[in-house]
Length: 171
Image 1 (tube, rainbow, N blue to C red):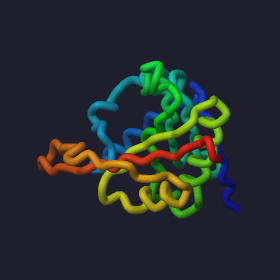
Image 2 (spheres, rainbow, N blue to C red):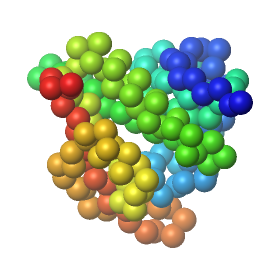
Image 3 (cartoon, rainbow, N blue to C red):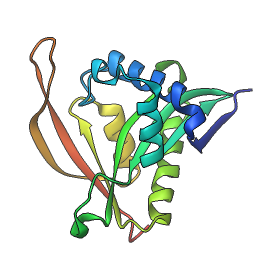
Image 4 (cartoon, rainbow, N blue to C red):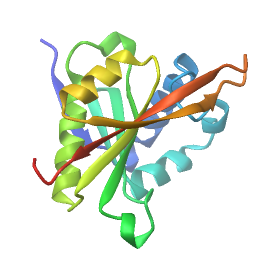
């Protein structure tokens, strides 16, 4: 039987986190703003990301299968600190359809609430219908679209980003 768990990543998870992040960027360049080359970095970069934010990992048995980052520093202006941002949601293809993404998102939202945030925000690339459906099923509402938010370096194609927010006051 497969055991699925979600927990906050620590510095000991940094190498696995970095490997999974690089895989996400290589396999899905059309849904993330960063490139795989930008994440061709030492493990210390992943350690810093884990230390400066709350990063949850979804595990299948003992294997890191998915990640999601709750950014604690994206909104630095005093009048915007009531909102947190969710970044870089990813589940490896061989572990999809097990409920890992939803479980990680539930944990991330609970953490944001516990930390006192009043809303969480994220963006999702146009065409990423699986992610869009997940976020909508969790109560996120789309409030805008940034046209041509991402320009793919290989072929010059543009991808729009949809902005979504979940209010935590009512949760």
